[in-house]
Length: 345
Image: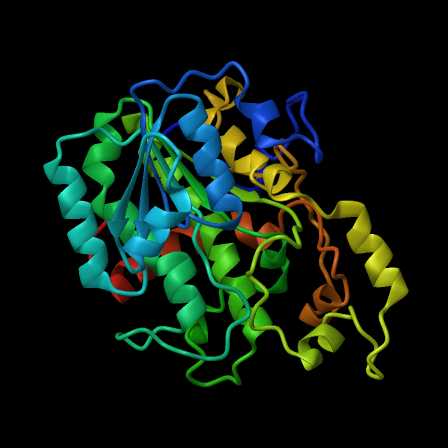
């Protein structure tokens, strides 16, 4: 089936010429996407909006799936070549309806950017009983990709980009209790598990899809304080992450480490734009990216999940469990079972 990134064999920087401060404008310069169609979940806010602006500036038509169509239309008003359609990633029927409408248009899908997500939310479940962060961040995108597969193949050179996070280091996929039915719910572990799933999905999708010209990537956009992903954070959460001391005073060391790596939205979105468009990645896929480059493979065996909590700046590189071949295959099968669809490539 061609190249595979199992055990991080492809996780080697290639000298992209970009870095952590590169912006979407830097990355999209010289790229022509005229006639290309992209779907960007969460394309109306945060990093997603910057990705939308970049791709449309290069000539692409961007479709934004949204739970609130009218609100999204107001946000993207004035940006050329943008369409907004109804979609709820936590609702299987909604995903099916969205995909069927797109397929009925007869268009090829050149770029699918699975960007939307929720983070560190209180425990909630979808209609099938799946834990909410895993459902929205992974299962919804798994089903969406599966339903749009024919349009991706039709493009003769499509790319699927999964926006993950350095927080995947918080947890591997815990297959014995993926939905927290037996263990105590931990919002950080749940989020980390969902972000690991984003990477494993890209690894397996690329392995299976490259024979049809479809390549897949996962990435860490980096730390930006300009998004609203942390809206569910409590005081106790800031203490758990080491950002605040128990008495409420700031952890100066944590602040300093975060200041070194924080990004603007344009910088945070740059890696996704690079993944979706760069000719430098034409012959490689299934890799985890950060700072507009292929990330290093991080073989460190951290002592505990708690160690990850106490590093608010995040860990660079990709954890070994996020590139494990057996886990990638097992997650694919489990995702088919949980979504009740067959994604047969």
